Length: 128
Image (cartoon, rainbow, N blue to C red; front, side, top):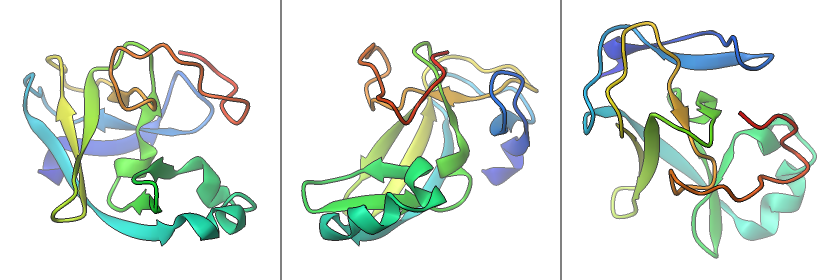
């Protein structure tokens, strides 16, 4: 699975992004990432570090850091992929919701729901 993606400099933000190395079909799983579960009570510590920009909300008891490239996907209000949780196996799944052409950046909506237009908050300065 990982052969289909790579990390490159994003043209839309000042940083890295996840890009397709080949065409990816709508409905195809792009990545399955293991999760590191962290108790909500520790969030105040993460907020003081750069990990704050890479966490995912998970449950009312935990937030998570996703391994692999899962924490490096950039945000868009018009994403071509989405993330889903496999709670049983503690995994995050990135799945294409549109056909993605080779060499295209892969975007998710950080609000979980692909069609959500909810503002992301002060930590996120650029709306795509």
